Length: 376
Image (tube, rainbow, N blue to C red; front, side):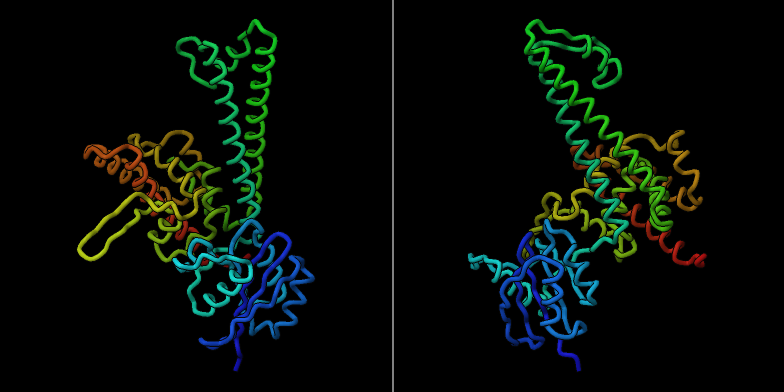
C-alpha cells in the first residue's frame, strides 16, 4: 500500500521553502528548510523525499511561472499549481513567513482544501505571452496618445472641425502644428515619435499573432477560426480566449466559464436576507476584458458584413448558425435591458456573460469534432 506524502513548496525567485505532511489526517507536518530555486536542487529534494509515485506536491501560482511545475513533472512527480486567492485564511492568523506558508500548503493540500489552476502547455503559453505583450503595447499606445493630445489641448491646439482623432488626417494636422518656443517644439516631436513607435509596435505584434495562429496545432487553430464566426470576435480576441482558457471542454458547463472570467454577480446572503452586488472580478482579467469589448458589437442590429463573412468562410454551417443565433439573442437582450432603464455598462456586462455561453458551446463542439476525427 502506497503511503502518500504531501509536499508544500513556497516558491520564490532564489529560494524554495519546503514542508511535508504525512498521509494520516493527524500526521506530522514537518518543515524541511529551504533549497535553492535551481533544477539540480529540486532533483536532490525529490530523491530525498522518497519514491516519486508517493509524492503529491503543490505550490502557489506566482511570478515564477510554471518552471517548477515542469521540472517536477519531468521527474515523474505529481504536482499542482494552486490558486492563491482560494487558499483558506484564518482571520486571526497575522503571522506570515515562508516556512509557515509552506506548512499551510502541505496541510491544506492533504485535507483537499486547495484549488488548482490550469497549467498551459507549451503552445498555449507561447501564444498567451504574445497576446499579453500586444495588450501591454496597446496600453502604451493609449498612454502615448493621451500625452500628445493633452499637450495639444493644454496649449489651445484643436483639430479642424470634422477631423476624427487618430485618423490619417488627424496625424497630418499634428505634423503641421508649430510652436514658437523651441522647447515646446521638441516636446511635440518627442510625443509624436512615441506615438509612431507604439503604433508600429502594436502592428508588429499583431502580425506575429497572425503567424502564430497559422502555426498553431490543428485543434487550437480550428477553435480560433470557429470563434471568429461570432460578431466582435476577430483574430486577436479569439487567440486571447484560447490562450487564456485552454480547452473550453475542460469546463463542465457555460456557467463555470462565466465564473472563471469573474463576470458573475457577487452575493452576500444570510438567512432571509439576499443581496447581490457587482461582478466578482476574481477570475481571468484578460479573458473578461476581451469579452467585454466584443459584447459592445451586439448593440447593433443583427447583420453579416463583408469582414464577418470572410471570417466565416472556413467555418461549418452549424457554427455559423450558432453565431447568428447569438446576434439575435444578445441584441434583443440589449434592447430589453436598456428599455428597462439599466445603465449601459451593466447591460454590456450581462451581454458579455451570455456571450461566454456561446463561446463555450462553439468551443466544445469544435473540440469534440476534432477528437472524433481519425488521426492522419
